[in-house]
Length: 144
Image 1 (cartoon, one colour):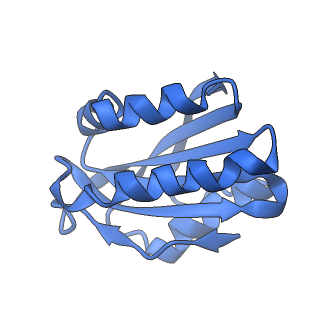
Image 2 (cartoon, helix red, strand yellow; image 1 turned 180 degrees about the horizontal axis):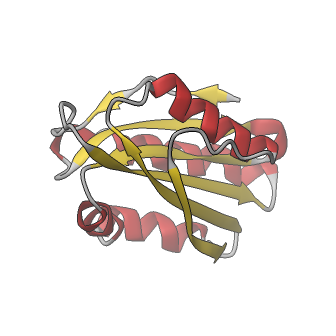
Image 3 (cartoon, rainbow, N blue to C red; image 1 turned 135 degrees about the vertical axis):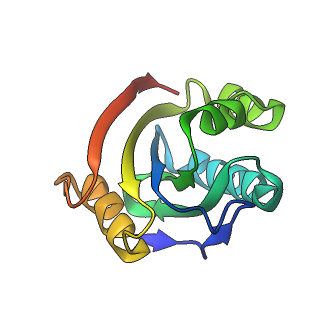
């Protein structure tokens, strides 16, 4: 599993309970994966200006035709606002029908080490979710 560098958002110093969002896109074919990952990189560039964003990693498991993100938010309203942005919606529309998307969100304390959050995401990709120190809530499953 490959990971991007951590990209901080404007709320990087947030304390308390934070919302963690994990996305997992599985491309129907290998040729769609590079474009999907590049689209994620372009969204990530705006992260320092994204209201409510604490930070984000992008990840890829190329041999499994999978890529996604692990993002941290101050609240669900901020995540929902991001999901409705024109740039995000354009990517969703461009890849609809080219694979399947799964996403989960959970709540964790801001003090939880980032390595633990990454380990939880890696466990999801490998098929063995780690519960750790967070409350897990699957919020969305279906086609991209």
